[in-house]
Length: 209
Length: 225
Image 1: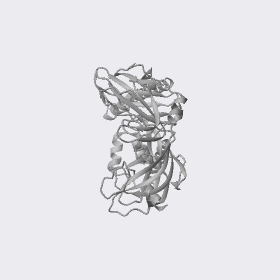
Image 2: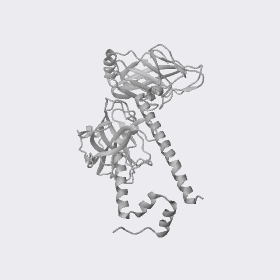
Image 3: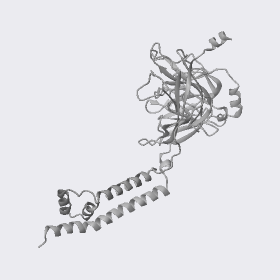
Image 4: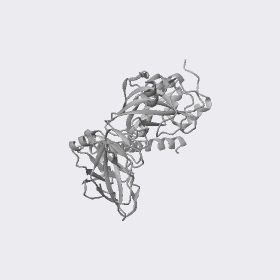
């Protein structure tokens, strides 16, 4: 006849081998998973934005909007259209954009300038370097101007990037616009103190000088 | 000496459980268990960098007009002044004044940073009556560009700005004669909860007590001349 102690011995001993085996299998699976993730680092590629290249004057189709960049201009003084003037130790670069929302109202909130010097220049929804187009309605083109201050060295070869979400461009369309700028543009702007206008957004096309 | 024995009811419970590990653990002197626990704790903290050599003993001395690196900025603190009037900047209370740390600012990273990161880089201490938002002890209300009075945000890389870190002081308190300026270095890393990489952990690396004088306007200087 078996005693309670014998029963306890059995319940302790028999699963022990299985438990150890299962534990080893789990550890082995984790180790294999780690090796696979380390050997094939695909996270960045999977999460990368879909970059849509563009040039000045040609529309670029994004998932959420059709975007057209106008001719960039620059100076050492910026007129934000609020009766103030902004100085800069570098140069102001402004790019007029036409935004045509697709499907539903869209508020484009991301912009940055990738300088020809390889550095990234932050453009915020407020502040000195800014892009604030508001909500564009489908069928109603929205006109807004990006303004950013950069060192003259960043001007030649600069690209403007525009996206939808201010903080997260993963797995979404981002326009990458080659502004077609040269060293001559940088030098001319650095020597010019005529204020360049970068007013607020509008549903009416800007007046051409 | 083996230390105090375990209570009889605990010994009885361990015996009835049939666990050899628990029985042997109970037979150990308490001192040995304490030493083992301390060693285990040390090993755990060592695994997370607890035994790494300390790189800095304390803040260095901040000297006026000396250029210093406090990532992601290069800062040169020139002077500390107070004034009641600054174009483009508005005090929250009538009669209050600005205490301004005038400095040269350069973003040495390869990307623009927002104004919050700049405000984290320089804070003020030992000044009575500072008007601060909750959770912003010693941080500037704003950083104004001397050239046009606008708020310095974002701070673009490769540009050298002349700016004033502005701290609002209650007007019922006398203007300070001296103030302690603390410069803080930040670290580029991902957040604990958010994978976005940004500047975190402001750590004081320079500290200096500077004289505070009343600001002299251009008109006053011309009148004196």
